[in-house]
Length: 232
Image 1 (cartoon, rainbow, N blue to C red):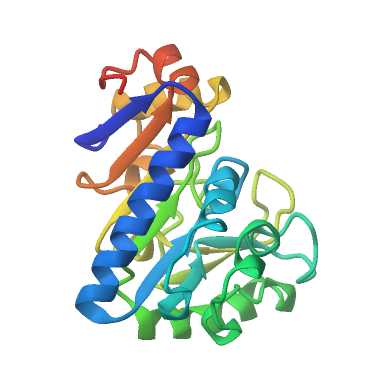
Image 2 (cartoon, rainbow, N blue to C red):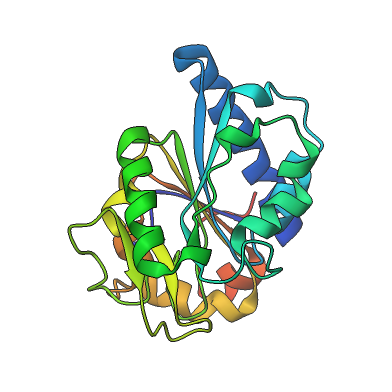
């Protein structure tokens, strides 16, 4: 089932703008209460516009701490790395200290990177906000199977069904270990998976997302999937 707090917005641009507002509100609350804001970023195309909008915001960036939900095992400067996208369109344009931007060291190989990132994650949980997207097959982060949840908080993924096959990912428990989750789903190609999630299919996204998460979808994804939440 979808989270109770699910909203459909007219266009992907509206989803990005609303996501930006939610992230800033969560950051401001965290800074008031705990003097730091720890966010886990998603990869893929959907959050890119949100990151571009965040680059134009006036925030106390010095108190933000950045993590990622997953990464491809490619060179650190590879254009398809999740960390590279966020750095290019957002993080390199704001004053977050480099020591507070924690890219997954996936260039070291899946097993070593997973072990090193797990040690970091254990010291930083619970996160304040985990941002998630969904693939057209219902995967999230680099979790492609409902069985991808061993005891390790960060896992090495081998032979993923999408290239590159070698990846690193937070497991389901780690993605849920946060104060808030925000899920973004846009595009007609996501409609079938969104409908399957809505109807109770055992998809990775369904296992990763808590019932109290905030889900934002655009009309292309939502209407095609008979999405029942109101259009705002």
